Structure formats: structure tokens, C-alpha cells
Image (cartoon, rainbow, N blue to C red):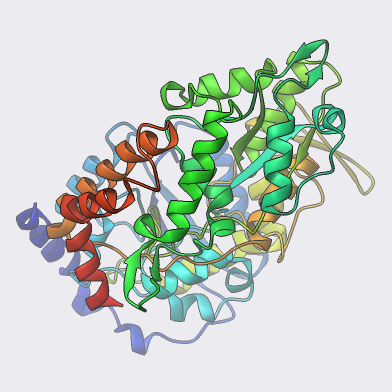
Length: 472
């Protein structure tokens, strides 16, 4: 693998001598010109919408004084990462490269630009970043992916909340009271069985409840001031004890460990569980629409996490756009990104085509049935900067996204070196296995905690901690 990456570096650096050093790049000009070659998963010349979208962006750039041609490089979606690497190895290096993994080792060869000084000069893009984008670019400046973080948002039926006689919770105590009040409460003539469910493991529960137990970041200090992983903190211990009490009382669906996301959603729609967590944005909107379809008239309400949401990993973007140092079209590339981040560009990116995805009557825009199938290709701007006048998202789904912005906190995780991969996997496997044993009551947080901590450290946690203490 490293041999291939070295070859890739040679291919990428072949034209470097003709490329000005980053420090020598000129400031943003009034107009930019050139051909931008872009390769991106699912952006294809065989898709008429992709071609038409790129064409209208070119036209809009021309209206702004730019002479920019955008050329789509076709690459099959299946096996995209492998095919991309083969293309780069061959010496065919586009101006904009969308990575979905495999970028880090290439970046280590010094062939991907630092995007921060380029973004800083933009009029719109710099303001359209989400908080996690800014943090990730600070830690790893080679990938740009301006989309919402995949935070979780808790929802439940409005009539179920009203039937419990309780108000929407804002504290952990109120959450506990609500969840325990749900089992046995009737809606539509049928009693709800369980208060909450999370599929496969406790990850979705953690996304909402971690901060309520003082787990605000992955790495934290213990009572002695030593850096430890939150997995073995006293907050984790208290959280698992609470989960165990919910499980024992039938509040947490006891089948959660064998339930996938489809089972979770089915139980939610059929009234078997009261509260679920959905990915903020479109997924919450899907839950809302499906619930109304299965239970006509049913509405969902967005609940407030008791102490904010789980910290977001900002070590790096897991995917996104990179610019190779070999490009001669940096100004044109940044003019392109800046336009699609602008209000005019976001109208195109977010709303599709007038007459097909939405209609206009005066100043009033109305979505058509096709708007839900449209998706932004390049940038989804932070709503605190710009929100188009029409959204494919419902107010509930939009509020879930905004919740992620309002409660954002950056995690202090970092990228692990390859030699620690086995330790990371071993510790996580040990943790997940034993979490269920604690939650189900097989293990006790009072009697078995010390043994669990020792086991986690032995499974790889000690190596992780030693490295973290060096890095941090």
C-alpha cells in the first residue's frame, strides 16, 4: 500500500515544478478563468441533472465575470475509492478530488493543498462553514465537506407526550420521569410498551445522554487529574447504571441489542416504543412523514437533550473535496466553491430546478413532489449564514439540524496512527460487549466496574491512553 502511495506521490508531483508554491499564490482576483476537472462519487455525465446543474453554475459564474469551464470526470460509484486511487496512480490528477477515504496517506506525501488560507479569502464559503467544518479544517486542512454533522435528535409523538400529562423534558430528572411514564400510556387505543429504543447498542442513547453525566469529550481528567478515556470514567459508570435501571424496568426496550434501525423505526411507527433518536435533518423528516402515513394525524415533537448533545469528532473530515498542489486553477476552483456557497448558489444547490423541483408565483415558492429527491452536490451551507426561502425539510427536521448547531461542542479526539489500529478495535469491541452485560444486569457497576476497567485497558485501552497522554 505504501509503495502505491509513493508512486501516487510521484505522479502527483510530476507537474509541481510548474505550479506556484502556496505561499506565492496571488490574492483573489476580480475574475478567474480556466477549466476545472472534478471527480466525485455519483457526479456523472450520464446523469442529466448533474450535467444541467454544472452548466447553470458555469453560466452564473460567467455572469459574475468568470470564464470557467467545469469538466466532470466519470468514475463508477461502485468501488469508487479503489478506482480513484488507480486514476491518480496513472498520473491523471483532476483539479478537485472527492475522497471517501484514502486521503490521509496521500496528504502525508505533501500533495494536497492546505485549504485554510484559500477559504479565508472567500466572500461566502468562509461564512457558510458549519462549526465542525472550521474545527476539522484546523486539525486536518486538506478536506472540505460543508454539510451538517450527523448529530442525533430525539423525537416522540405529540399526542403521547400529552397523554403522559408531563411537559417536554429539559433535565435528566425530567427525562427519567417521562421515559418511565410512557410504558402503559395509551395512544390510539393501544398501550405503548417501552419508553425508548436504540438499535444494536447504546450509541444513540449516548448521543443524547452523555453530557448529562459529565461526559463532554472523549478524553477527560479523573479525580487525580490524570487523562483517561471517557469509557472508563465515573460518568460512564453512572450512565450505565441508569441505563441498567431503565432496562430492568422495561423502559429501555430489552430487545434493543438485537434490533437494527429498521426494527427500531417499525416499533416507533407501530407504537411499541415512545422515543427514538433520528439523524438530524432529512431522517427526522422521514420519521415525521412515515408516522403521519401509518397513523393519520399523528405529529412528532422534537425533544431537548438534557445537557446538550454528544461532542462531535473534529479530528478530520471522513470525506470531502481536496485540491492537489499540481493544479494551475486555484483561483477558478475557489471562485466555483465560493459561488455554490453563496445565496444564489445555494438556491441552485438546495432547491433544484424551477418548474421541476419547485414553482414560483411572485415571491412565493412552492415545492413539488420531486424536491424531496433533489440533493445538493457540493455544499450545504450553515443555516446561520444562509437558508433558502424554501426548504425540502419540514420545520421539525430543520429544527433538528439547528439543534445540532446550537448544542455543538467539539470533541478532543484525534486521528490514530496505523500501528494503534488493533488496540483501538480491541478496546472498542471489549467496551461494546461489556456495556450490554452491564445494561442487562449480568454485570453490576457496583461490583464489576474495576474488573471492567482493567479489561478495557488490557484489550487496547492502555496503549490508547499512553499515546493520548503523549499527544495531548
